[in-house]
Length: 371
Ligand code: CA
Image (cartoon, rainbow, N blue to C red; front, side, top):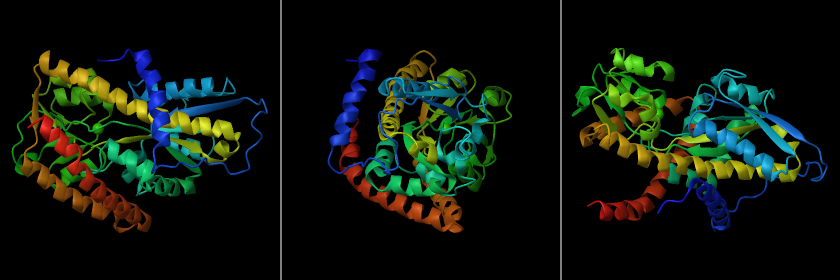
């Protein structure tokens, strides 16, 4: 039975409170002792710069929700004005803008900053990496957050988890893919590490902006594209121009979204407002993943039943080939950066351990349901 939206959002508060009490995770308040007194009555006006187009479903919405919750929780003492990507600064300048204090808070995904921080993609997602549940476990309770804070400290930023896409889809293709050879010469829009893996197996990863994707695929400028999952892909209309919808999204098995806050601005807040920010981010972290999951279930059905979309599973040969190419790409990525290598090793170790558990818990359970 599904809850109404209001009840659904209300229920998240309870889930969040329960999670905070669970043994194994004992978050400590980040109180430096330097914070001003709580009841100064001072009002705070912050700006949030984001990497998302204004009003972008789920991700843009989540920034507006965060602002609303912070205002309510602070009794109106704190207001955050949200700027979509390009409204105040271009999307990919959000990190720098918060780092230098021109805005106090930003929203994005760590892998956008890979050019500045080679370790950054490990805090977002890497091909054949951890899923949303495993990433959240690593970040909140497995040592990931400490490494993430260390990675952002030189930029005067404090990161907070701000959502997860869940397992993405493998993309839209106009030809059947059976072997690794079928990727040879294939032009696909796939950014980041996934794109590097595609190049390694003989395909071409083409960068195309979101707004030009549909026409690029329609006119054959590219042969294939990945985007996110059923909800966002349906809005893009790819089902009208592509024959096959492949799964799984091996390249983005659960992309973590983030908020990053200017360290001095955060520490200059009274301690209760600091905790309100931290708590609102944690609640958004949960809402984003659950909203993705809730919408994807609806739009997968729509794509399959109303638009007869042919959902295909990548063959084992393809996935194994992509996986070994990924190993090489990741090794190259961390070869020249000691900190990136430290994060990579920590990530790998945690993934190995959590997979051993997931294999005998989640995997067995789903096999039982879907024999
Ligand atoms: Ca994607």
